[in-house]
Image (cartoon, rainbow, N blue to C red; front, side, top):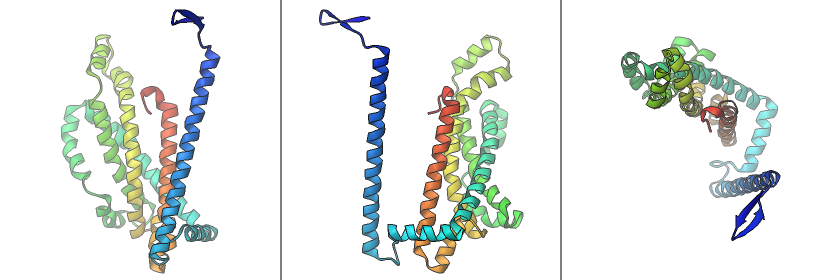
Amino acid sequence: MTAIVAGRATPAASPSRRRSSRSRRAGTTVARTAALWSASIVLGLAFWSFLAWWYGPTTMASPTAVVSATAELWQSGVLGNSIQASAGRILVGWALGVVVGAPVGIVMGRVNVVRQLLDPYIEFFRFIPPIAFVTLAVVWFGIGETSKIVLIFYTSVFIVTVSTIAATVATSENKLQAAANLGASRFQIMKTVVLPSTIPGIVTGARLAMGNSFLTIVSAEIVAANAGIGSMIWQARNYGRIDWTFVGIITLGLMGFLFDRVLRVTSRKFLGKYGVK
């Protein structure tokens, strides 16, 4: 094929050439992103080292001290057990919150009577922080895993519910009318129109709930847990190990980053056709 440019015919770019050009641009973008990330990390470590030097080891642990403390805690098994305990509690409580919150949000968004009945409770409890219920959770469910999981569930379920309600209410009225005019039943409309349009909102709520789960787990583990990142941070306070505290904080950040990335990539892969990005 040819293209007319300035009064003369020029050969159009072949599909293989266009694919090669896109591949080069994608490679350049990845390389630029990696370079910026690396520069950001190097600058952050340099600034951290300066602060550690300025304030001293009793106030600010240096990067090298944190690396040594990480190796110490890992070899003793404390860090590995803490990560496993906290990750398990977060995943179970968060998953329960998504499984319950998404259907409740869809029903509340579609059925006005249900929404009017449940809305006062949703609006009341979602403003009470989970840490306010830590003592009650321990009294009601004991110091075992159940109390921590219940608190994570409490953190997650309201966020997912509210996000799902908003996505359900925002469903295009034209699509609903078109499906009804074509003879679709209420169940078919729910399955083919409402649910696909709410999936991006559910994923957004799930991501927000995951972040809040990390906020809650530390409080719960500090109060009633023998293992977990929160418990490890509390033990660091008792032993005066500022470097252990830094290890716990950095571990929480890395865990959250990893969990969110996995959720984003998985959602994009399996739910991308519904507009999840």
